[in-house]
Length: 264
Image (tube, rainbow, N blue to C red):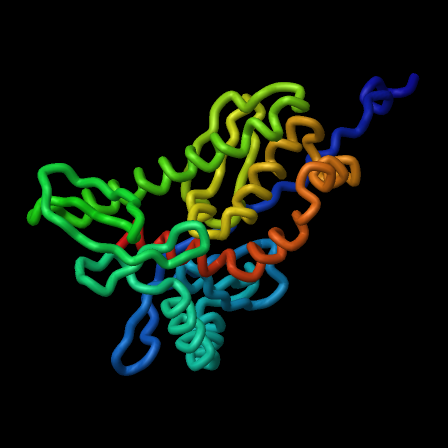
């Protein structure tokens, strides 16, 4: 009699993927400057890689690579790293500065910013630019909060103007729209219908922001990025390719500028 166990299907255990190991480390970039960078041992990495974006420097290592190899790689590329960090800082611009020469980005423009005293902390737009009202003792956290609230209010005003054009032929409306800072995506549509938009879109020219809104609304029709999906985007926003290319070229700088303004 054949064994019962020989009749049972062979169970195969799915291979497990180890999660990347992340840690913040210090690196002496030059005689005057020490930086913090993210070191990641990633099982998917094939080679040692050094990258810089608005979040800072990142050293990615395959699992087989040692920390000593990572250190050698950093020392060999410290000139490139210093240049990239300086370039990133220049692209991000300055933070929130209380002087008469400051500007703030809004809708693809750099608007002059003036300051005045007052009891409440708020930022408003006028005919001649932006005006920040704040008590003399207002801290950086309060100023950044007011700036974030201002950008969110401007974003809601923009989406409020655009949505009536696009919602009538959608199967449903988004459950709600939220603004947040993201590291990579410009927008997302959650299964519960929440539409999330990157706050950095308020720094971009309005057509780029509108394209992202249309893109996410079209996910109400098709959840993927199939040709049918892009056909829906094309029908509603024919210039979408230009705006997508703009965000690909300038997106890192926009996100970096917002990060510096809101994180100090």
